[in-house]
Length: 151
Image 1 (cartoon, rainbow, N blue to C red):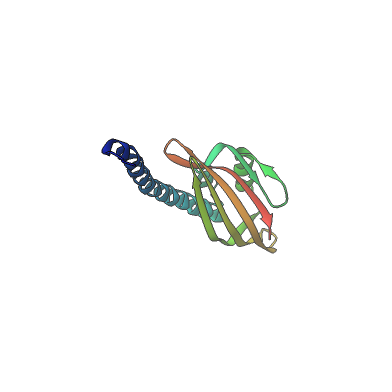
Image 2 (image 1 turned 90 degrees about the vertical axis):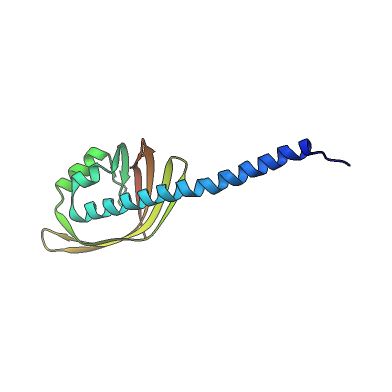
């Protein structure tokens, strides 16, 4: 069987295009992962400080935020709850985070470990597994949903 240059050109062109595309995608994913990691840390810091304004800027208007006790907040009710909280965080860590970017969405998982101190002096440890979903809106990543389960 004889193969001329024309018959070989199309497969070679397709292979070259495939290699070019696969080498570009991780560059974009890395930048998105870095932006999401920065937002997750900003969310943690704002949460630890009880800073509703800091959290508001990171959340989508359509936010669905579920707690480990099955309570579900909207963006408005979450921010109201933070503003009226009868506790402060004495420690709050997001341990072992993983970020997976899938198109314009990202799946973030981590262990939420901390301690709350209530106004009556009672301290309560927290140890939860968290799932966050972030959505790219324009050039920003916004928290779209969050779910918590007890470990």
